[in-house]
Length: 125
Image (tube, rainbow, N blue to C red; front, side, top):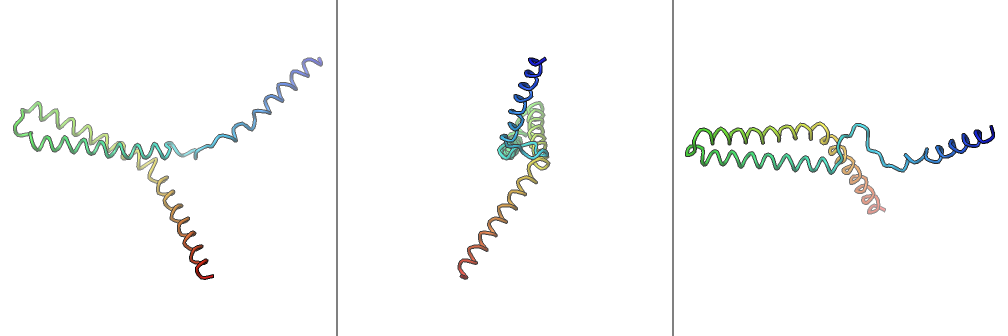
């Protein structure tokens, strides 16, 4: 019986040693799906898709009259696909990133204003 009690105490102590381990991890807000880095990558992806779609539209404008119908259909499909991807990425950015970045900018502006007030108070003293 003493061996069983000793084992139970030993196992419960081991479990308590690891109980505070989760505090070491820095956790993001539970409503945040993407990190700031991922948001910036999404934003640059939107720019790339829009630029690629614009390039295809320019290609259609230049060569559309000279090429056959299958070429035009293929290019229009490509342009629409790229535009749709840009639209989808923009929606993701608006939902998951825009508020986070806006909040960070507000906090930076608030900090900047506080620093300005501190400097102004120092000048007056």
